[in-house]
Image (tube, rainbow, N blue to C red; front, top):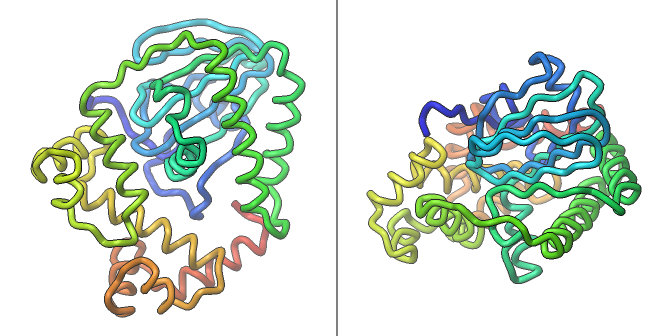
Length: 294
């Protein structure tokens, strides 16, 4: 799998500029820069929804190529290899969702989203008008800097994932073809989501998964080209960024909440991974959000 590139957003290897847990953009905004073709790639920790409202699309999902036009929605999960070729008159959008959002939704409904399928293709059908309104509303909120923006985005995404779950149950025509490595990594990611603030060691996670620490590191390297400890640290870092930007907690309180024994240790951890101190990151992020930027 090493020859398949891993991106955050297609063509970008850097982290998102802000700790938003989702990203919205039109299909044309990115695909037009690449000759209307998104070559096969994968994401280590992101889910994506592609909604084609108009035009034609050729989907390449794990090597299987299919062609669709107008009113189709494609769901892909972390590590699923996917690529697209769009017609130049395409109209639609891409919603990229970070793993914690899906993990939270699955916890609330007490089941796996779309039966843990690696990829699902859904015909919009009778719900086209509803989905057009839903995606348009989400787009407006994403590009805004209104009060309670994060809460509003979470609400729209919850409605969208609920629709996805219900429609997939109706359609029920996809099969789960995850490898054992996918399954272990998925379970590990869920455990990290539950316990990252407790500062568990890699060995503690490995013990719960029934594998050795060496095996867990090998799985993580295969799935996302990171060590298990790097996966844990990235989740801690994401929560630290979100707390700095979206709460009024002091750096000391954030440090305690994330399980660091000393604020100085937290500050060194944050600067090592970002190149910035927590306070400097907070000030820069607040200024950026105040300008209405992503």
